[in-house]
Image (cartoon, rainbow, N blue to C red):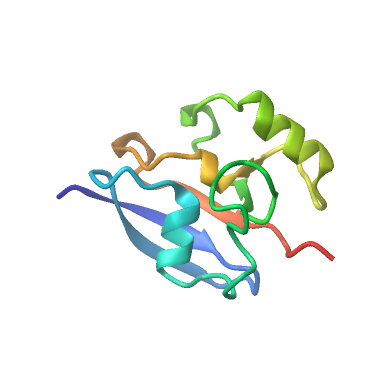
Length: 111
């Protein structure tokens, strides 16, 4: 099993350095949920299908290392609240060894 370290800043502003497995085909949203870093029912509402923006996060580093946004992700972010230039849907970010040291901040919950 190969884990990487990711820093996730929750919606209250607290930073959590977590281990994320690279060998389980997980995405960043699933890691956030597994560590319960967002209130139940407030993240990943669509189950990771890029059909809601509840898992929106801000990429604080390694932006160039992430996969390109799909059309579906771009469309969903166009409709989301609190979007910034570094916004991504965490369900669309697979956990890979290249992301060791990634830092993200969860976007505020939609009004």
